[in-house]
Each structure stands twice: as C-alpha cells, then as structure tokens.
Length: 139
Image (cartoon, rainbow, N blue to C red):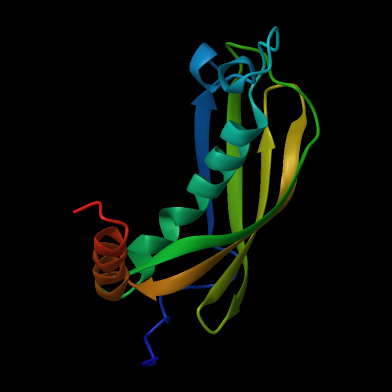
C-alpha cells in the first residue's frame, strides 16, 4: 500500500453524537418483546458512527471501515431518553485507528469500550464491491 498523509489525525481528537431512544431503535425493534429500552445493536451503531468524524481529516479518496468492537452495555435507557455517544481517538498504528468510546444518558454511563477502524482507499473499495456483486449475480 502507498503511504498516505495522516498528519491531520491526532491522538485525543473527539466527537460526540446524540440520539433519542425511540421505538425504532429499541430492543423490542430487534425482537426482544416488552423491552422498551435502547437496543444494544443500535447503541453499538451510534458509538461506531461517532467515530467517523475522522473522515474530514483524511486525504481525498480515503475513508475508514469498522473492523472490531469491544463494548459493554452497562445500563438501560428508556424510550424518550437522550443518549450521547463520545468517541476519542486513542491510537494510530499505520492505517489502524483505535477509539475509546462511551455513552451516557442524563442519569449515568450506559456503555463503554473500544472501536477499531481501518483506513482504506475508497476507489479500490468500491471497485471491489462491484466485482463481488458481479460474482454474486447481483448485477
């Protein structure tokens, strides 16, 4: 792989993303009847999404893809609660970026963990997707 300029990235960069817990992102929406709280899949998703702010600091035609999650869902957040996910860039190793992530509602910390993303050339990525779609008979 070619060397790319990552000088725009700095350890400690942070981003926060908020959601309101709703029926659509509840545990019940993914099959847990009677669970009117933020579903873990949605919580993981918002924590991961908080990490992609980094794209604005990457060279043109580069983006990141998620490659690993290690998260603990610590407490429930009921429908109507606002949950804030915070991502902090904690390590840069070549093209691998590691984030410390956590989420809070207005009462307590509801999740914590780490998320890892890998920097890729978007042109090659989308070319490979098209090749795979052909192999799968999707186009």
